[in-house]
Amino acid sequence: MSLNFTHIKGDTFEAVNFAVKVNTVAMDLTGATIRMQLRRKASDLTYALALTSIDNAGITITDAVGGLFKINEQIIDIEPCFYVYDIEIKLADGTVKTYVKGNFIIQSEVTR
Image 1 (tube, rainbow, N blue to C red):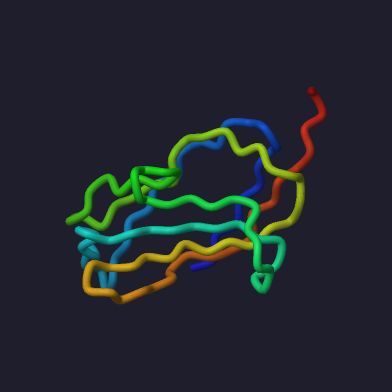
Image 2: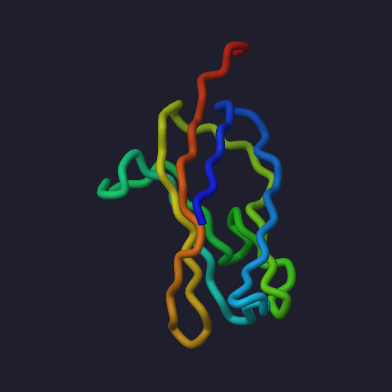
């Protein structure tokens, strides 16, 4: 699934909720790790922002059995740019899936 975001540098990013379903059945996220990274290009070696569900560092699994997680509300204060991102889910059995990807545009703020 492709999902695009536009955000103003330094503003609070509102939480975004996700429900992971496969063939209409909730994916069990018990023991899963979810990661998200923003990069200028997918091939870049360095990222501008990295979020993970480990210790709720930007992503929180809100209902593991129900397949629910969210990108937490947070201030995103990285360089204005056109970024690409994806969200990778590593399940407890070691299976890795990427269901969400897209563009993440950070715009310059005017009021500083």
